[in-house]
Every structure is written in structure tokens, then in C-alpha cells.
Amino acid sequence: MDNTVLHVADVHKSFAGLHALSDIDLSVKEGETHAIIGPNGAGKSTLLNVCIGRLKPDTGHVVFDGENLTGRAPHEINQLGVVRVFQTPEIFPDLNLLENVMVPILAKRDGSFKLRWFRRFWSEVDVRKKATDILEDLGLGPQIQSLATSLSRGDKRRLELAMGLAQEPRLLLLDEPTAGMARHDTNATIDLLKKIKASGMTKVIIEHDMHVVFSLADRISVLAGGRIICQGTPEEVKNDPRVKEAYLGEEQV
Image (cartoon, rainbow, N blue to C red; front, side, top):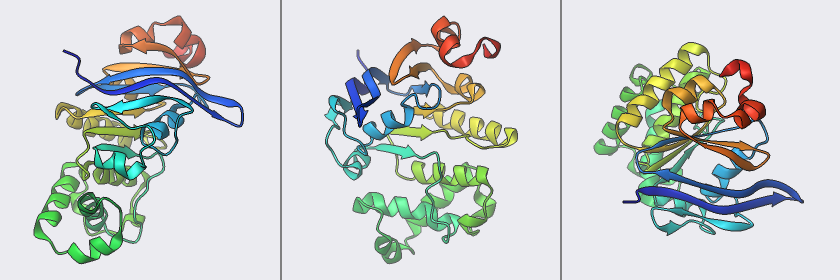
């Protein structure tokens, strides 16, 4: 039985003649944690932007759970259950943590991030409880009334992850979830993502830290120059000479 949730088929994307993505074919299975790695400029973020509708491919298509996403607006793709957590935290700095997580819960009902809906429903007990539970699960419970702007970088990343989980994703796309973190914050994030992995949620992760990748990934796709040069299990990728040459380096594997 084919349990593919996300299928990217023959995707090409160019910018002013520069080939950002060429011949991209990749499949992500249900419940899998699939890592996408590669050097800077390899096309990793461009690929995620194609998947969430921020960019339209020149050719090819993206299918999620049987639905063709190509040409759909980002909010429509989000409503299907595809949620991206960005490399730079996209939070509401002047709201507290509870309010930050309530916003996407309410937006999921309305189909957009309109604060007027937040103001209308802010007192709903069920929404507050759901937001509180998510924050506590991610270790942010003690700071629930703190303004988001006061958080450390690691906690801001954790808050955005909470906002992503609040949207009840069927596919969670994580762009550099540990970028700029100290090692203790990175290890804490790995533990959180392992907990999410145990829940069976399907995830695609872009990450430069190979410790994070090899701690979490079931399968890995390696991009270089806008093309996939290798796909396989962590062990297969670690030992592939093309990957060593293009990205990892002999000393890292």
C-alpha cells in the first residue's frame, strides 16, 4: 500500500534565468520525518515555498494527500493541513504567549490570520485551554503571560512551533528549527521534535545541523545546485561519496 502524503513531481523553478530547482522528485510517507539538507543556495527554502504556494513552479506539480497544490493560494494549502514554521520566527511580539497561540487556533476556524477574530473570541474557554496545553507541552507554561518580545531566541522558535502545532497540521514543514540556538536549546528542541515524531505527525525538516538531522530523520534528500543528488536513510546518505563532496565533508561523517 502506498502511504505517500506529499509528492513533488518534476518541479522546476527559475529566477531571471537562474535555475533554483531542476527535476525535483521526492515523496514523503505518512508519519515520516523527512530531512532536506544541502549547502546554502541549494534551493531548500525555495522548495518549501513551492510546497506552501508562496511560489508557483515553472513546471511540475506538488500533490498532498491526493490534492494538487499547484496554483493554490497559501491559505488554501494551509486549510488542507500543510503548515510551515519559518526560519525567522513569525510571532506577534506585543502579544503574550497565550495570545500568540490563540491567534492561529482562531484563524484556523476563519481561514485567515485576522486579529479581529481574535478580539471577538479571545475569552472562549476551549481556545484558551488548547493554547495553554500546547504551551505547557513545549515547556513554555511558566512564561504563558510574558510578552513574546521578551523571549530568548530559542524560546521564540519554540513559540512559533507552538503556533504551528495549534493549526493541527497533517504535514509540518520546519525551516531550520534550531538555527542560531545554543547547544542546550538545540538539544531541547530535538527532544520536543522527537515527542512530536512519536505522535505520528508527518514532518519535513530543513536543517544544517547534522546532529539534529541524524537524530530525527527517517529519510533524507540532499540538494545541491537545485537538484537532488542523493536520497535515502541517514546511514545511506552519510556514506554517499557525492554527499561528502557536496556538503558534509569527510571530517563530518
